[in-house]
Every structure is written in structure tokens, then in C-alpha cells.
Length: 327
Image (cartoon, rainbow, N blue to C red; front, side):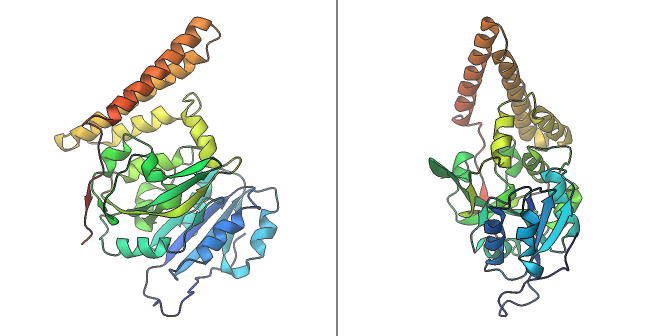
């Protein structure tokens, strides 16, 4: 069921000629926390926003909670099909020039959209999106997503020119922090609905081939640790490659990259990551072996792989972020 479409213009001083942003929240059984996510979008300093909440078959009080917002939000309900399908349903209903995603247990800081739209409107269609930093808060402390991904950025903002090489070598948290041109999402076909986890990194890899990204050093999103969150489940899945399609995602990305000289460095990075993922997978399998010798061999392989990764991150071949000023 979908409510009447509403475009919020919270500040009359902001002209209607500003680009419309579609904010999409997929949610499943998060009635106790989804209001924080919704309220953080309703209180954005950027005024032209339509807020679409896709209830992915919740069985708790989610529908009752969403109903209290009336026509301030657009509610779409579907049978449970996973986060990728929920986000794609939101994209299909969106009218905005730009599209942003927020998981139902996280929040946007008030100026997120204002700052991302400002940077994207300086750029042409060759820049498909703008990514901001995310403050990740665990029960025992917090770190920014850029620090976790070894994204060292001196400038407050700019155009990230070597996205494909960087994201080929590490996981960069995307969903909550990105604002994407709807035209780019349409070119990519949205999220891969066959993926229950890692769908965000699959989209990251595919979008990295479209062109340079806008980037903001400031954390404009608060990620919060909650029981059963998609991030926590996906993190567990990444450490057990038997159930996560990590290798397949990397191999598909490698197959997309042209084999000419311009992309030789990117192909080397992806080839290295595929080999690393396969070694990690082998170590995981052996570590679960019923035999002591197999389990020991697996643990040794995983330790060796951890050491190899650490050495690579300190080598001159580990790609660092390259930023140019937005014109």
C-alpha cells in the first residue's frame, strides 16, 4: 500500500528549482528504532525531499508506527524479499534527481543532504554520486568509516578520481553515506536482488566504473550498533566466505573491466583480491575441519593471510585516495 506522494518543502526560502531528493528507508521489524531514522530525514536543512519507507514484510508494530507520520512520508509495504529488493522498490517509486538510502537503525545529521547536493550540483553527469564519512558507534567506542577503510583525506571536499582502484582493495561503507543520481542507479539496474548481504559492496564496485565521485570528509551519518542489523550480519558473512558470495562479486567485477592498458592497474588489484579471497575461503574451510591437523592448518593460513594484507596496506602498491577540487 502506498500513501499519496508528498514533497516536503520545509523552508520557503529554498526555491522549488532545487533538485528533489528521494530518501529511501528499507525496514524490517525495526518499529522501535525506525522513528529515529525518519525524524533525522524530516529535520534535514535541505528542504526538497520526498521520504519513502519500504516495509519489507514486518511482523511487529512497524505499520502502526509509520501510520502516525501521515502524509509526511510515503509508505510502501511488500512481502519480505530482503534489503536489495526493498531499496529497488523505493527506487522505482522515487521521483528525485538524487537518491539517498538510510538503514532504519541509523540517522543522518541535519546538513547531510544540503552539503551533498551542493557538491553534486557543481559537477556534471560524469560524477554519479557523492559519499560522505560515517561515524560508526559501537557499544565499546567509535570510529569513522573512512578511517576503517584507510581513506586518508586532507581536503574537506572534492572529486575522488581513483574510486575503482581504491574500492577494489577494501570495503568502503556506502549505503547510509551516499547520495546517487537516479540516472546512475537506472544505468546500473539498482541493487542485485540475488544478494541478501554484500549488496552494497556489489553496487560500490559497479558504480566505481561510472566515473569519479564527490566526497566529503565530514561524518554526516551516525551508524548505530543494534541487534540483528544488516551490517553486523554481513560482517559475519564476510568472515565466512562459504555463505557469502564475496569471491563471485569480485570475479564479476573483474570480468566487467576492459582488458586494455588503461585498466591494467585496476585489473591487477582485482586479481589480487580474488586470489586473497580464495585463500581466505580455503583457510575458513580448513579451520572448520573435524581433524586437528586441518583446523590448525586453516588457522595458520588465516593468520598468514592477515599478515599479507597488513604488509600490502603498508606497501607503495596500496592505492591511496586521489582528490581534485570541485570546479
